[in-house]
Image 1 (cartoon, rainbow, N blue to C red):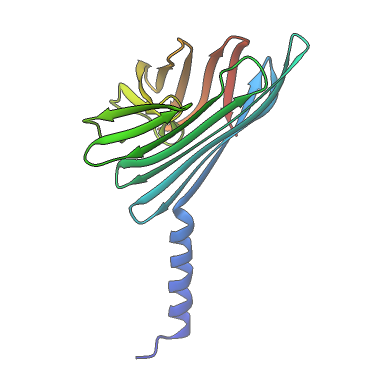
Image 2: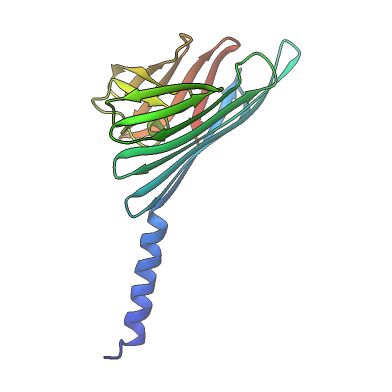
Length: 200
Protein backbone atom coordinates (compact mmCIF):
# COMPACT_ATOMS: atom_id res chain seq x y z
CA UNK A 1 0.00 0.00 0.00
CA UNK A 2 1.36 3.39 -0.98
CA UNK A 3 1.56 5.93 1.88
CA UNK A 4 0.34 9.40 0.88
CA UNK A 5 3.19 11.90 0.78
CA UNK A 6 1.59 14.25 3.31
CA UNK A 7 1.35 11.37 5.83
CA UNK A 8 4.98 10.39 5.21
CA UNK A 9 6.10 13.97 5.83
CA UNK A 10 4.04 14.04 9.05
CA UNK A 11 5.65 10.79 10.27
CA UNK A 12 9.13 12.08 9.51
CA UNK A 13 8.42 15.35 11.33
CA UNK A 14 7.07 13.60 14.42
CA UNK A 15 9.97 11.13 14.37
CA UNK A 16 12.59 13.87 14.19
CA UNK A 17 10.83 15.76 17.01
CA UNK A 18 10.92 12.67 19.22
CA UNK A 19 14.64 12.15 18.56
CA UNK A 20 15.41 15.76 19.49
CA UNK A 21 13.38 15.38 22.70
CA UNK A 22 15.86 12.70 23.85
CA UNK A 23 18.73 15.22 24.10
CA UNK A 24 18.92 17.80 26.88
CA UNK A 25 21.51 20.53 27.49
CA UNK A 26 21.50 22.91 30.48
CA UNK A 27 23.98 25.78 30.90
CA UNK A 28 25.03 27.54 34.08
CA UNK A 29 27.05 30.70 34.67
CA UNK A 30 29.78 30.33 37.31
CA UNK A 31 29.95 33.48 39.43
CA UNK A 32 32.60 34.42 42.01
CA UNK A 33 32.78 37.72 43.86
CA UNK A 34 29.98 39.07 41.64
CA UNK A 35 31.79 38.29 38.38
CA UNK A 36 31.28 35.55 35.80
CA UNK A 37 34.36 33.31 35.80
CA UNK A 38 33.21 30.42 33.61
CA UNK A 39 30.50 27.96 32.68
CA UNK A 40 29.08 24.58 33.62
CA UNK A 41 27.31 22.55 30.93
CA UNK A 42 25.16 19.54 31.76
CA UNK A 43 23.96 17.35 28.89
CA UNK A 44 21.98 14.13 28.64
CA UNK A 45 21.46 11.84 25.65
CA UNK A 46 18.90 9.01 25.67
CA UNK A 47 18.81 6.19 23.14
CA UNK A 48 16.39 3.44 24.10
CA UNK A 49 17.36 2.25 27.59
CA UNK A 50 20.87 3.70 27.34
CA UNK A 51 21.57 7.12 28.87
CA UNK A 52 24.78 9.19 28.70
CA UNK A 53 25.11 12.18 31.04
CA UNK A 54 27.96 14.65 30.78
CA UNK A 55 28.92 17.45 33.17
CA UNK A 56 31.67 19.84 32.05
CA UNK A 57 33.04 22.93 33.79
CA UNK A 58 35.72 25.46 32.89
CA UNK A 59 36.56 28.39 35.18
CA UNK A 60 39.22 31.09 35.49
CA UNK A 61 39.51 33.51 38.41
CA UNK A 62 42.03 35.81 40.09
CA UNK A 63 42.43 35.37 43.84
CA UNK A 64 44.92 37.58 45.70
CA UNK A 65 46.60 38.44 42.39
CA UNK A 66 46.97 34.73 41.54
CA UNK A 67 45.32 33.20 38.48
CA UNK A 68 43.29 30.09 39.30
CA UNK A 69 42.14 27.82 36.48
CA UNK A 70 39.95 24.76 37.13
CA UNK A 71 38.45 22.41 34.59
CA UNK A 72 36.53 19.19 35.13
CA UNK A 73 34.41 16.68 33.28
CA UNK A 74 32.23 13.77 34.37
CA UNK A 75 30.63 11.31 31.96
CA UNK A 76 28.16 8.71 33.23
CA UNK A 77 26.71 5.78 31.26
CA UNK A 78 23.53 4.08 32.46
CA UNK A 79 21.26 1.35 31.19
CA UNK A 80 17.73 1.40 32.51
CA UNK A 81 18.10 2.97 35.94
CA UNK A 82 21.50 1.44 36.75
CA UNK A 83 24.87 3.12 36.18
CA UNK A 84 27.18 0.93 34.10
CA UNK A 85 30.32 3.09 33.93
CA UNK A 86 31.67 6.56 34.63
CA UNK A 87 34.80 8.62 34.07
CA UNK A 88 35.74 11.80 35.89
CA UNK A 89 38.65 14.19 36.05
CA UNK A 90 39.39 17.49 37.70
CA UNK A 91 42.45 19.63 37.09
CA UNK A 92 43.46 22.88 38.75
CA UNK A 93 46.62 24.90 38.13
CA UNK A 94 46.94 25.59 41.86
CA UNK A 95 45.35 24.81 45.19
CA UNK A 96 42.87 22.00 44.48
CA UNK A 97 43.62 18.30 44.33
CA UNK A 98 43.75 16.82 40.81
CA UNK A 99 41.46 13.80 40.49
CA UNK A 100 41.05 11.12 37.83
CA UNK A 101 38.52 8.36 38.47
CA UNK A 102 36.98 5.53 36.48
CA UNK A 103 34.07 3.35 37.64
CA UNK A 104 32.93 0.16 35.90
CA UNK A 105 30.08 -2.14 36.89
CA UNK A 106 31.15 -5.75 37.37
CA UNK A 107 29.17 -8.94 37.89
CA UNK A 108 26.12 -8.59 40.10
CA UNK A 109 25.91 -5.44 42.18
CA UNK A 110 29.64 -4.68 42.27
CA UNK A 111 31.65 -1.75 40.92
CA UNK A 112 35.39 -1.57 40.27
CA UNK A 113 36.80 1.91 40.85
CA UNK A 114 40.24 3.33 40.16
CA UNK A 115 40.85 6.76 41.69
CA UNK A 116 44.25 8.31 41.05
CA UNK A 117 45.71 4.80 40.65
CA UNK A 118 44.11 3.41 43.82
CA UNK A 119 41.74 0.46 43.34
CA UNK A 120 38.44 0.34 45.24
CA UNK A 121 35.54 -2.09 44.99
CA UNK A 122 31.95 -1.42 46.01
CA UNK A 123 29.74 -4.44 46.63
CA UNK A 124 26.02 -5.00 47.16
CA UNK A 125 25.06 -1.75 45.49
CA UNK A 126 23.17 -0.80 42.36
CA UNK A 127 24.03 2.83 41.62
CA UNK A 128 20.92 4.66 40.42
CA UNK A 129 21.46 8.32 41.36
CA UNK A 130 24.75 10.19 40.86
CA UNK A 131 25.88 13.74 41.59
CA UNK A 132 25.49 14.42 37.85
CA UNK A 133 21.76 13.64 38.16
CA UNK A 134 21.36 16.61 40.53
CA UNK A 135 21.61 18.89 37.48
CA UNK A 136 18.65 17.21 35.77
CA UNK A 137 16.17 16.31 38.51
CA UNK A 138 15.32 17.07 42.12
CA UNK A 139 16.55 14.29 44.46
CA UNK A 140 13.23 13.66 46.19
CA UNK A 141 13.59 11.18 49.06
CA UNK A 142 17.31 10.59 48.44
CA UNK A 143 19.80 10.94 51.30
CA UNK A 144 22.94 9.43 49.77
CA UNK A 145 24.25 9.73 46.20
CA UNK A 146 27.24 8.38 44.31
CA UNK A 147 30.04 10.72 43.28
CA UNK A 148 31.80 9.60 40.09
CA UNK A 149 34.63 12.01 40.95
CA UNK A 150 35.34 10.71 44.46
CA UNK A 151 34.29 7.10 43.76
CA UNK A 152 32.12 7.03 46.88
CA UNK A 153 28.64 7.68 48.20
CA UNK A 154 28.17 11.15 49.70
CA UNK A 155 25.51 12.34 52.16
CA UNK A 156 22.77 14.59 50.77
CA UNK A 157 20.85 16.58 53.38
CA UNK A 158 17.33 17.91 52.87
CA UNK A 159 17.32 21.55 54.08
CA UNK A 160 13.87 22.84 53.09
CA UNK A 161 11.46 22.60 50.17
CA UNK A 162 13.56 22.43 47.00
CA UNK A 163 16.88 22.90 48.86
CA UNK A 164 19.49 20.16 49.42
CA UNK A 165 23.07 20.20 50.72
CA UNK A 166 25.73 17.81 49.38
CA UNK A 167 28.65 17.17 51.77
CA UNK A 168 32.02 16.41 50.16
CA UNK A 169 34.73 14.19 51.73
CA UNK A 170 36.83 17.26 52.62
CA UNK A 171 33.92 18.84 54.51
CA UNK A 172 33.09 21.41 51.82
CA UNK A 173 29.46 21.61 50.73
CA UNK A 174 27.36 22.43 47.68
CA UNK A 175 23.77 23.58 48.17
CA UNK A 176 21.32 22.90 45.32
CA UNK A 177 18.08 24.87 44.89
CA UNK A 178 15.14 23.65 42.76
CA UNK A 179 12.00 25.41 41.57
CA UNK A 180 9.23 23.19 40.19
CA UNK A 181 11.71 20.30 40.08
CA UNK A 182 14.31 22.18 38.01
CA UNK A 183 17.73 23.16 39.32
CA UNK A 184 17.98 26.97 39.31
CA UNK A 185 21.25 27.43 41.18
CA UNK A 186 23.94 25.79 43.28
CA UNK A 187 26.33 27.38 45.77
CA UNK A 188 29.67 25.68 46.44
CA UNK A 189 31.70 26.57 49.53
CA UNK A 190 35.38 26.74 48.58
CA UNK A 191 38.53 27.82 50.39
CA UNK A 192 38.59 30.99 48.24
CA UNK A 193 34.92 31.77 49.02
CA UNK A 194 31.45 30.83 47.79
CA UNK A 195 30.95 30.09 44.10
CA UNK A 196 27.50 30.42 42.53
CA UNK A 197 26.28 28.27 39.63
CA UNK A 198 23.27 30.08 38.13
CA UNK A 199 21.06 28.57 35.44
CA UNK A 200 21.03 30.60 32.23
